[in-house]
Length: 568
Image (cartoon, rainbow, N blue to C red):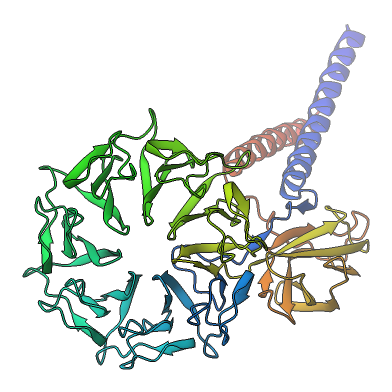
């Protein structure tokens, strides 16, 4: 019996001992588990490239390129020599340009400060500098004081501009009333177009001797020559002040263009309208009948018209699919379909494979386009080198113009202009290895690309706001720096500083967290992983509390059992 009692006491003691051991184990697990969750491995974020970019619709460029006929200095390079490939226009120092326009033999540029420049033929004062002297380099248009221009257009021998107030200015030839000031007097400086009361103009176009405008209400106005109905008001009477184009009720115009004797428009529904001369089928309505009111042309199934341009006797359009269509005279291949056959319906321009057109322009009998990649194409007549391919051979399909990236192209009677896209640069940063440890060498590699000339200059590597090193770019446009980084979180960047026309740029930051070796307790642990935050916090605290509480109870029970008096 005594042995049995002793065995029972021994079993109970052993059980209390096991409970005590379990309690201490739970306490140890709680503490260790919490610490394990509080410390995470080193983190490396994949590097990303950052690009210095400007919107094409607002980009200001310091370069206009010109090619083709230069009899009157319309290329603006200071000479009268024709050019079969593009040459820079001699802009005043420090000038940046946001828009360009061409007449038959003169050229205009809109600067980023809202002024206007003109060069080329000036027989009728179309340069607006208060003279009739032709210019081989740009001169300033004599705008009224405190006037800011937002858009420009050029006809055969007259010029138009929209002001920031929504009014329209005109200068040059006014024989048919195309200046819209109520007279037929030429003007060597801008005069105000007599718009209807409370009219705000948002877009303009200029033909041979007529002018067009879109109002903020989506209506269209026309003034000047109307010999074949190009004003679209239902008559063939010239008008020295703007008259309303006879649009169908509910029609909203979003774009327009003026040719020699015909006019085109795009509606908000994606259809095209045409009116005026149609002898060559340039209205694209399937007839050769001229019309003094707009006729409707539907786009190909599943697409919409997004832009139009008008030449002497042909028309060009862009669809929402990025294709180009053309109608009218095709004597010189200006329709771009590989033939010389004219068409009174819109035919597809034979673009190079995988080409998307974003902008178009038309000269007398040549056509131009800009692709989604910024390349320029030209087709049609090339007797003055206006296609810019280095030849004087007419082309029935689009050929590449020898240009850098462009945002806008325009065509005159025998010359063409392009607004060169401002160069952009991209700097990309690579960190090797992507997850370094304390004391391990880290190699930082920056790669710079530029849309203009090859980049030259230096790259400065930084951690947080501290410069690590500045290294020169190699001929391969890379720069490298190797270093060791202390424990902690590092925000790494690479900043490119240019020594040529390629603009500066900086990489997107790459963040890494380096932890000290686990056997070095003296090094502080820093970084975003301490303390525990986020959705894991309640779970971690709850589990730790439960383990600690259970362990404490078991230890306390063990203590009470051992403190009780032994039975006799």
